[in-house]
Image 1 (cartoon, rainbow, N blue to C red):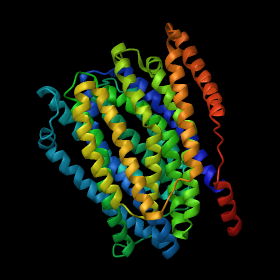
Image 2 (image 1 turned 60 degrees about the horizontal axis):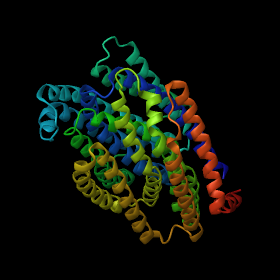
Image 3 (image 1 turned 180 degrees about the vertical axis):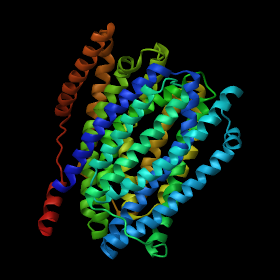
Length: 511
């Protein structure tokens, strides 16, 4: 158990530190830029590069880490590194070509998208996009370096490098006297370059040195590329949904895109700490268990993850749903970030919080698909999700504005998660045990009881001023924590983990 638990805890600690810095960066950006139309343009300019970055980084992690683990067992470390170097060179070359083509044809590409900006704002969008596209190249290199660490279960150094990225980015914003939208673009590039340098230098600590030569004709190279293509298709469809949200929001009122962006950052912090950490550390473990044919260990771990994180994330979602306006006001409402900005952002964040646990379930299922090296169902489900997202957006946006886009995201995520689970059970059989299902039902019931109780009592006091606001947020969080523990006791929630015996048996045999 120690082998599995410690990397998760280490990564969670560093992720928490990173998100504190990211919060500080968001506060700085909110102070200088607020939710005005120029910041809306910057967000749109970032989205296409970040879309491609997300789909490339996600597909590379899902396909290359299993290849690294299996190739090292077959060929040894030296030949595996030559294989990985060959794959990396091909991917970086492809990304460079894609970036050059985007710079050349960015105007035509963006004009083909129904973005609701005026002419002068649209020209700024094109200009910022040409600068931002190089983030795609740097993020690709970062992902390829990070895979080498993750395959060896070394998660601290990539996390430290990401922290260095954030620090460098914030310093660039502070030091640039202009503080315009180009400042934000160049700050991202500066931070990414710092992260690459830190990761590359620290590889020597792991005694990882690329050997001479390439292995372009090795079957593992072809297999890796074939695995990457469907994963990239799945990621493209998945990441297209937020892009569609941004495009649709650009046809709404001023501040709609910015509010979605700030709410996404707040939600992303929780996803990084609670979801990405466990899904990242579990990928190599899932891959090892699948290679050994030990599906009972994999299923037992998934059951424990769903129970433990349901126990934690559902109460957190209830708290955010009710108290997000106070948190957003405390964090952001100053400078150009107005009371209206707070109202727009907090309403979206409260909706996103409902999907936090759903996102965890989806990510764990995605790692299971990565481990069994089967991506066809992910592509199918992502395509279904894209169609659902567009349909829900059109209907809900008409009635609820930018909040409708957030509701659409949660609904689509829930449906696609159910589909992923269904297709996975067809491949490996039943996953959730009766005990897990009963525990989750009790957890949902306890949190529903707390939700109703808070709805009745939360308006008994309205804080005035910053000090009262801080005291109110802390005190309500403590009271809600006590309340959910009482509710769990009343509902008879008792978590019983099954993986202790599974891991103990496995490691005992290995010893």
